[in-house]
Amino acid sequence: MFRLVICVSGGGTNLQHIIDRIGDGTVRNVRVVRVISNNAGAYALERAKKAEIEAVCVSPKAYETRERFNEALLSAVREPEPDLIVLAGFLVAIPPEMIRAFPNRIINIHPSLIPSFCGRGFYGLRVHEKALERGVRVTGATVHFVDEGMDSGPILLQKAVEVREHDTPELLQRRVMEEAEWILLSRAIALIAEGRVRIENGRALIADEEAGRADGEPAPAPGDGRTAGRRQ
Ligand code: GAR
Image (cartoon, rainbow, N blue to C red; front, top):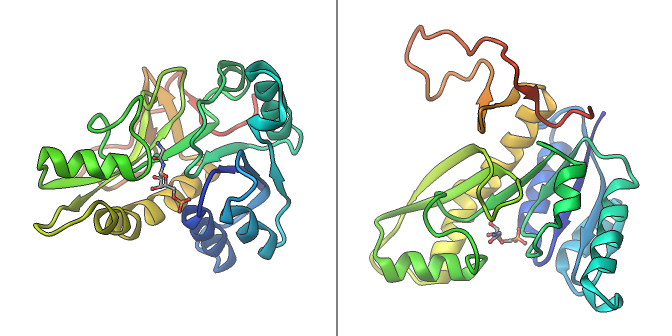
C-alpha cells in the first residue's frame, strides 16, 4: 500500500475528494495514514475522523518558538512513514528540514495556473481576488512538487478554468475547485503511486502520458531522474 500523509488547514474539500476517490476505487493501492492540521478547528479534521483516519493537530500556538513547531510538524509527518505528503490547503510555510527529509515526496495544490498568482501572499480566496482584479479570462489550478521556494517546485498537473463576467472570488474559487482542484489532486496521487512520475532537470515527467505529447512521440526514456514519491 502506498501511504499518504495529508496536511490541511481548513474545510478539507480536497481531502474529501481524495478519500472518496480511494473509497470508490478510482485511486488504487493508496491509503491515507494520517491527516495533520495546524488549526484545531479545521473541519478537515472532522472529515478525517468520519473516514476513520487518524487526525492530528499540530498548532504553532502550542509551541514557544517556530523552531519547536517545525520539529513537531516534522515528527508528526515522519512518524507514520509516508511515501508521499500531500498539502491539500495547508497554509503553513513548509520548513526546509521537512523538504530535505522528503525530496520529491511532497506535493501541493495551488488554485491558479502557476506561475500566475502564486508565491508569498497568494493563498485561498486571495488568489481569486487577484485574478479577478487583473481581469484574466482564464485561471485554473496546479499540482506541483514542493521545493524550498514558494510555489516554485516542478509542475506535475495543471487545468485551466474559464473566468466569467459576473464572477465573485467565491464563485470563481468554487468553479476552480470543482473543475480543476478536486480532479487534479487525486490524479496526481494515482500517477505518483503508480510510479509513473519522475523529476528530471527540475521538471516532472509522466511516463505513458498521452496528453501533452504529439501523436507517435515516444514516452520519455528512463533518465537519471528518480521516481517521485518513493522512499530512497
Ligand atoms: C484550496 O483552494 C487550495 O487550492 C488552497 O486552499 C484551498 C483549500 O480548500 N490552497 C492554497 O491556496 C495554497 N497556496 P479545502 O480545505 O476545501 O481543500
